[in-house]
Length: 368
Ligand SMILES: Nc1nc2c(ncn2[C@@H]2O[C@H](COP(=O)(O)OP(=O)(O)OP(=O)(O)O)[C@@H](O)[C@H]2O)c(=O)[nH]1
Image 1 (cartoon, rainbow, N blue to C red):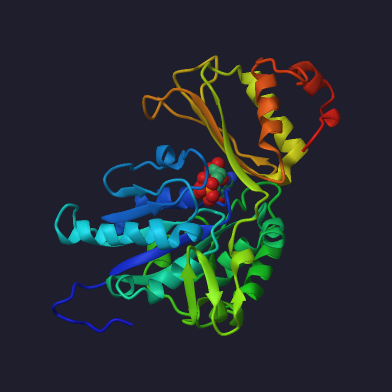
Image 2 (cartoon, protein in one colour):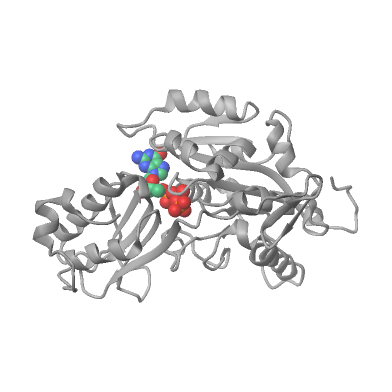
């Protein structure tokens, strides 16, 4: 791709970290950031949702981190991400930031990776300055099969990977063996690892199409032009529009509370949405003040029907002490979830069942 030219700086290694919502990308990234092999790395995190929480949950928040605004990578690749990468190079070249050695882009879980990879391969300037080393795709051994069935973005993320990292095999519902067989068929060229794989085994190399399926060649071939995130295939006049855009049924919203939340109410709320609406609850992330320990917020993660064991932070990460829950749902009305939240918090609203009615007969919940 790039000829060595003594007047031109060596290309900067870049890794794309992808994987469906909640698969474990940030967890892997946090582990990488503690590894000396990752020193001087700029991490670009793309969040989907009205308000982000990832920047509060990634441990090394400093100048090395750039957070794109809400909106997703595949839709903003011509805007945000390209600008961000160009801006990064400008700042580096004029010495406003240190000479970082590597860039890692964590895509949103909903991103089709093709547009960003396409830009990194074909953009006239970025392809000179960055060297796409590889795509690391994280797949969750509990939800992986269902997610591959239901979401084309997830299949594409797996198909373009150089490395597949299988997480959550430690959980009781995990089915890693069948998943591995499916992944090997979907992408015979990728190596499959566990979550504790050392960073240096995943980084390095050079992105290529060898061993990947024919459709990956078609997605990433040069005859595509991405315009506002939507690819148009000039050979066939076929518009990617529909497949490349997020399903309109996917919505992100947030719930907040200014007052600490009683622990039992919070637990019942989580249990109710999880058990009644699991597959529709693509992602839940929360930073919550519980009434019995409001100085130490809990971080809670939900991924479909799995609610992970919450962790307690020693203190609030910043001055904002509101409890915040970010949710990404599929085919579920945010107002319906908001009404349940309000009911559990004891905020009465017209036409809303009270908490007792909800918990005593959860099957009677309307809507959803
Ligand atoms: N038991 C278990 N939990 C895991 C593992 N990997 C990740 N998790 C948990 O899964 C939840 C989601 O992990 P994240 O790393 O935030 O997932 P993500 O892919 O960054 O999520 P999004 O950015 O929302 O798409 C967290 O509660 C993690 O602690 C694993 O290997 N085992």
